[in-house]
Length: 253
Ligand SMILES: [Zn+2]
Image (tube, rainbow, N blue to C red):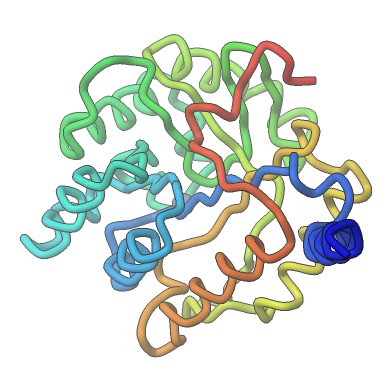
């Protein structure tokens, strides 16, 4: 009887956790805050107790005392990593921004000051508009750039990294409209993530960095509900959630 119960339990567990999924880790990342939507992101991360990185924009923190307070709150949460996403966000003119290496480095350092991201370097960071990795064990340029652009901008990526930053790109994006409204449904997104893992189409084996933007989680888009559904849905698939600082390891492919 006991053996039957054990076998039943095993089958139940096997049905809940797809084979191989237990070792798969999702790294949640949120860009461009502090914005309208950031408070909801922090609420959900706290309630669900999941780690995440928020790559913040220096000038957004200076918009109002309330926005500045969101940076302070994010930094106070043990599971949240606040990273640097530049001071100016390149004013969304990326080619012009990356044409001046010294200015790029200065803009990143200015954001460290404004966001209070001093020590110890390297500071986790994401470059505005560029899907670039510069970590201890892995380095990757933005495949979306032309060869000419990539060659021209490589010097920026190297200088920023050498100025005390670990640069994180991403594997996949939960896309949004110009208004900030998420494009894919939560179910669709979870399916897409499953396909990427299954096809081995992530930069690091069994690791997926998911890019989202704080503005997607405003009340008007039912931000809390959607992010809660994403976290619980990924958890139900058996994925783990990782701290961005643990992403890069000596065994990274
Ligand atoms: Zn951004």
